[in-house]
Image (cartoon, rainbow, N blue to C red; front, side, top):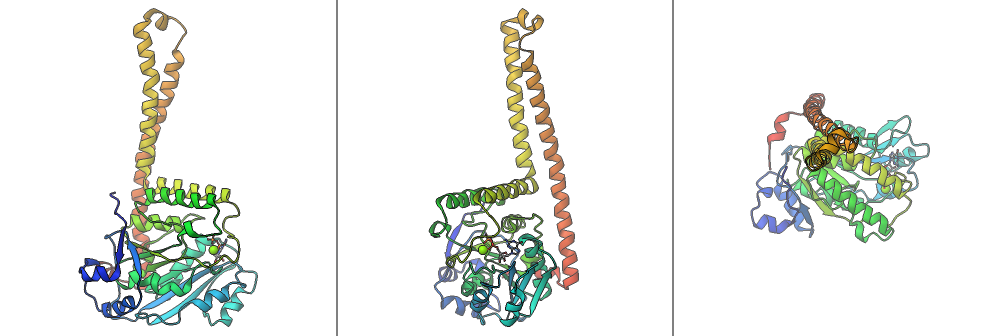
Length: 385
Ligand SMILES: Nc1nc2c(ncn2[C@@H]2O[C@H](COP(=O)(O)OP(=O)(O)O)[C@@H](O)[C@H]2O)c(=O)[nH]1
Ligand SMILES: [Mg+2]
């Protein structure tokens, strides 16, 4: 799949140029006013996309916060979620209580939150995200924002985060934390983040600068199509899925708040590397099986041919000793093993590709089931701004 270049797109310039991204729609005047009052720049990385909006309907934003014992920091988060955003009629907060054993739920209620999704016991962040997404859809969200309960992200910048969606330019928006400038990140963590993002961009065919940022916004359509299955790294997985489903992804630079506590997701850099590597390898196998297995197959083929060529060369130059002597037969054995490995890799590539096609069909069925349950018509999907 060809990659799309990362374009820095100043909003007003795009409008002046009549860029197709900003074509006519009923909400344009609202979002134009909002955007012009704010010198926002966002990077838009693809012109593909499924962009939808229920024009004319009331727009609902759901801010979802997966929480595991966040009583200390949750008030800061809830206080900074904007109460009003131009172009948005309703803003609701959804707390995903992932088996909290402290007063997180009571604190949230005190701050006026009415929507909760409870896990009786801890199920992990990825499942919390997945269940939260479905609940937000059930709540009738047109736009879904995910943030964290540790006040890592600047909720007051949600209007900036959703601006590309409001302008009809994106299905998914990722906040770039600008990790190179985060003071409490060690050099090793920065390098790790950069390397991880680079590999992920290869798997996802994207050019996103911070692929694991958890501060994101999704349109209803985009959320409907995402099905993260890994136990860790929902951010990595959903980025790959969004790209492979031709969703249009925009990036907005939003710096993070000062750190209030250590990450609980990753106890050490090593654990981070291990889990991220597993996720990325899995992602490659799931989404680009032919690239993985055919490369392996080709590598084994080349390595397997070398000992055979070596044996052939010796049999020509030292004919009697080779054919009748005990030497060099190991070349044939090693070559045979490598050629068998090559054959197995090619075969696995074909099988994995068939499984991938099956999964795509299953995901289509899943999407239709969700639409059926939520009463969403697929016709919305073809409506572009
Ligand atoms: N670590 C962790 N966080 C969870 C879990 N379930 C929900 N969360 C929430 O997920 C968010 C991210 O966790 P955090 O420790 O800040 O990890 P970070 O992604 O490295 O910043 C926080 O709001 C947590 O409260 C879980 O099982 N483990
Ligand atoms: Mg955090």
